[in-house]
Amino acid sequence: MKKLFNILIFLLPVLAFAQQNWYKSSPLDCIWMNVGSEGFSSNKIEYISLAFDSSGQPYVAFKDYVTYLKATVMKFDGNSWVNVGNAGFSNGEIYFTSFAFSPSGQPYVAYSANGDAWKATVMTFNGANWVSVGTAGFSTGEADFTSLAFSPSGEPYLAFEDFGKSNKATVMKFDGNSWVNVGNAGFSAGQAWFTSIAFSLSGEPYVVFSDYANSRKATVMKFDGTNWASVGFIGFSTGRADNTCLAFSLTGDPYVAFIDYGHSYKATVMKFNGTSWVNVGNAGFSAGLSAFISLAFNPSDSLPYVGYMDYGYSQKATVMKFNGTSWVNVGNAGFSIGNAGYTSLAFSPSGQPYVAYEDGGNASKATVMKYDFPTGFNEPQNSQLSIYPNPATNIITIETLGATRESNLVFVNIEGQQLITRQITESKTQIDISNLPSGIYFVRLTSDRTVQVGKFVKQ
View 1 (cartoon, rainbow, N blue to C red):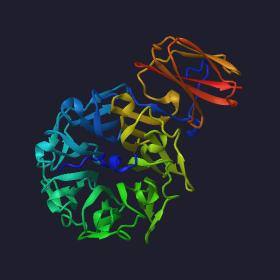
View 2 (cartoon, rainbow, N blue to C red):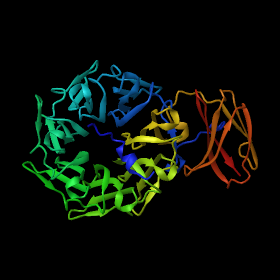
View 3 (tube, helix red, strand yellow):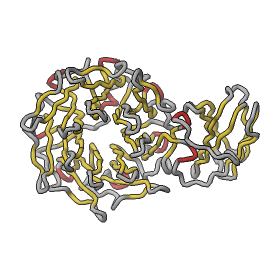
View 4 (spheres, helix red, strand yellow):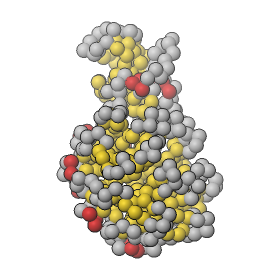
């Protein structure tokens, strides 16, 4: 029977600053903001996966409820989210979406679909249509937890839980003509959940999974050209590890992030130091229970980042990074409006973190947010927000000519922390700022049609 990825949820206990130019002086000037409209998909989505093309355009692939649960891919063109090819291009309902770009810049999406007997399928966009890479439904049996990655030479590899091999891990690659096994099919000792594949700097494929043969702890294996061999000890996590994901640092060290049952279902990241797997910072570093963990490295600062649904903040989205000593929040923890399901973290080529998710605050539609300087984000907007007096001491007036019906007003400091939130319905609003410390603050006004941003100084 088809396993839903969100089974893991059930396993958990339940600024227009006039006449002054501003520039991004430091990361502290950044806040989390929407990329295009929030909830931009036509209907509810699941299994969202985010990736960037070489020009820096973000793309998302997801299970699309408006097309009867089929696959849809959209991209942000600088103004709005648009379909890439036809929406709903898969052969029926899909699960376990994995999206990636080839080294040549071509988008690929992998999934299992009921029209292909839940077997693995990979498709690519040829500039006009989505077409199958090799045969659709190429795996021997049902394929769950499909994870797609490209070798340095450009070959697509797919890791998955292989129902044709007693639910063990299998990796296949497309050799230009057909999909062939990489080593033995079903190479894990037992069932393998949450398979995730990545390539080392030397081009070796590594796979992490939740290892049923070892109390569902985390195990990593690599293909040495002949066989699949364990990397360090098998089952190296303290307890059961769910939602395992794998990424390599820019210096070539493998890192694994997971929901850590040995530490109260919180997020843990470990790395292999050449001899053994060691914790990166504290184990179980998230504020509360975590879900839908996504791991990535920032190309700008070489630091590991994780994005996840944060039960410590009402199941909203949180992103944290390891600063060399400890795990710290990137902007506000719990920055999404509502629940953030299927969180997918990726970095633009310039090093900006983006997060895509199923947005519980917008009818479970797709939303993408990025951490950026407010006046530099790509929103379809013409800000008409006026803030005065500026600088101010006790009271400021915020005035807008834009729509204010049920608008949300947020004050954010330069550390990305939300200090004042308010729903307003008037075009002119006065706010008492006397209790705010002296400093620079951002104001974001979000309505159903516009996002307007301003900045002011509290004396």
